[in-house]
Each structure stands twice: as structure tokens, then as C-alpha cells.
Amino acid sequence: MKSFIHNTYAVFRREVHRIFHWKIYLLLMFVLPAISFFLFSVIFHNSLDSLPIAVLDQDNTPLSRQLVSMVDETPTALVAYEIQDMEEGMALMRQGKIYAILQIPALFEKNVMGNTQAKVVFYNSGCNITINGLLEKDVQTTVRTFSTGIQLQLLQSQGLTARQAMALALPINFDKHILFNPYINYSYYLAPCFLAMMLLIFTVLLTVYAIGTELKFGSAREWLDTADGSIMAALLGKLLPTTIAMSLMTMIMYVVVFKIIGAPMNGSAAMLILSALVFVISYQAIGIFFIAVFDNLRLALSFGGGYSVLAFTFSGLTFPIMAMYPAMQWFSYLFPFTFYMRIYVDIAMRGAPAMFAMADLACMFLFLIPAIVMMPRLRKLCSDEKYWGKL
Image (cartoon, rainbow, N blue to C red; front, side, top):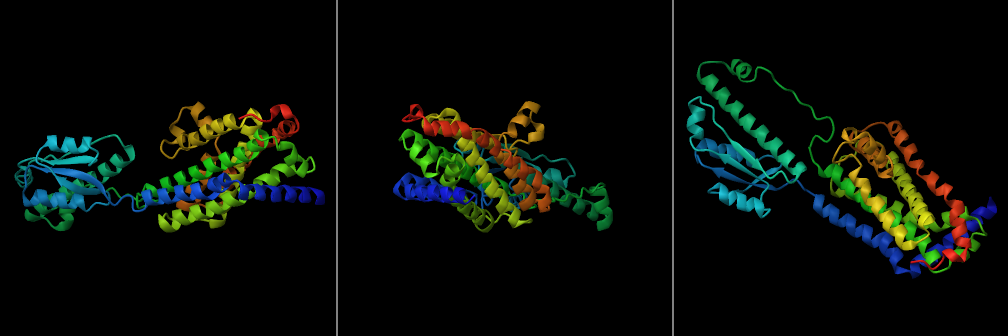
């Protein structure tokens, strides 16, 4: 055991020396992840403050202007343009300047006050499902609230009490409670998702590059000899600096998510930190697997990068896993990212006890198995010169 620790430390010192002499290591470890975190923090910080829409008010009465004002005060909709006709609105939508058009037809106030059904038309682009869903929900809720308010006034003007008018206007009262993410802020779950995606991509690329360059430049035997022939000590010593660096980046990621973007943190911080560490280690194991399978730096980087970016598609954040075809549901479990985001949503957003994350944490540990299985193969690659020098 003592010799194993000594061998691991020897490889660790060798790897630290390589890191500070090869600038690409520092670029992949710190510079590029930090830049990506900064960009996403800018994108998602106060991301719901302005989703511009246009209004075509063909009635132009106090009542129609009151409705426009109420729509403008919703959390998502910003009345950025008052247009004169639908052609102008469609031109703005094609140019990407607005996401929707609200049309208030002529005789709107007259129909409302005459107890005749009035119609308000809402056009949205349909190109962005998340944005359109949020806008439609807020505008629809506002119009219903506005309509109910007018109906209450009309009923009270006929001599009914406020209680009687409310019972007639709303015979069934729908009482909705949003248990988690009551702000309906999509940045609170998308921002951590994209930041974690950046983290896993750089972790896989770093792992493949660190091992692949040993094969490419023919220094693999020297690396293995530094560990006294122990492939386990060689891997631990080589990947420990990356583990430390990426763990540090997870702390920065959490600062961005919870302090800058302002996402809620309702559960155990210790469990989130632990899950992030296991998340990093699981993707390091995947990097080991790819370089051991392909014994080629270029191919391993290509397949590792392709595998990494698929994680978001099958994570269930934009399209629920339970609604996927059974084969795709099973495919989603081939990515540690799926289990990490489950833990994040459960702990940070739902405030679930830490024990509920144990199953997903155990699933991430399972991704170490392919790397362990491929260790004899990797030891052979390091010992046989015919595998060296490939791009």
C-alpha cells in the first residue's frame, strides 16, 4: 500500500509538471470552462425580463388600453411595439424582433359593455416551445383575469353583492399551487444544465487528451514506469490533477448558479457537492474507456465529444424521459449527466432529503466499471510500441 501511494504521487508530480509546461492543459482546465460559465451567466441572468411582443389595438379605447397595460405588466411579456396592421407585425416576427402579436379587434369595448362576447387574438411564432409556452400562459391568464373583472363589475352594477357576483362569475374556483420553482423561471433549471454540460465536455476531453498524448508522443512506457508498472497508480496519479481542477470548477459553477443567476437552493449542499465530484469521476472513467478502445487520440476525442453532447438531448430536461419510446428511455441511462441532473433537481429545486439521491449517485458509480474493465487493455497500449504515434 505504501509503495502504491508513492507510485501514485510520483505520477502526480510528473503530471503537474506536464500541465504547467503544456498551455493547452491550463486552457482546457480553467480558461475555457471559466469563459463558458461567464457566457451562460450573462445569457441566463434576468433572462425573463423582456420577451418582446407587438400589440395591434384596433379599438383604441380606455378598456383596450387597460388590457394592453395589464399584459405589459406580466413577468414575461414586454409590449415593445404598437403596430398599425398585421403585415407590420409579421415583418417584425420574421426579423426576430418579437415573439408574438396580440390583436384587439375593433368594437372591443362596445361588445364588452354591451354584454356581447368579445374576442382577443394572440399569434405566436411556435419556433421556441419554452418561450411561446411562457408567453401564452401569461397572456391567457391576464385576459381571463381581465374578463372576470369586467364580469364582476357588470354583475355588481345589477345589484348583486361582491360575494354573489364572484359566485356567478367563477362558479368553480381553480386553486393552483406551484410546489417547485414557483417563479416559473426556466433559467433556474437550464443554466445548471448547460454549465454541467460544459463541465462534462471539458472533463472528457481532458482525460482523453492526457492519456492520448502519452500514446501519440511515445511517452506511455515512461508514464507506466513512473508508476512502477501499476496501471492503477498511473491512472490515479495522472487524473488526480484533472479531478482537483474540475472539482474546483464545480464550486465556481455552483457560485454562478446560486449567487449570480439566483437559482433556489432548497436541499443539502453537501449532497450536491458530492454528486458533482462523482459526476466528474464518472466522466473521467468514460474518457479512459474511449482512449482504451480506440487507442487513437483523434478518434477518441471525436467519439468522446460526440457522446458528451448527446447527454443534454436525453437528459429529460426539455422532453421528459417517461414520454420517450422505451428504447430511448434505456438509452438515456447511458449518460451520467441524466443521473446528476436528477440529483440537482431533487436536491436544489425540490428540497428532497439527501437519501433520495443515493440511487442516482450509485448509478453514476456504475460508470467506473467500463474503465476498470479496460485497464488491462490500457496497460497493453502503454507497453507495446505498435500502438504509439497515432494521431
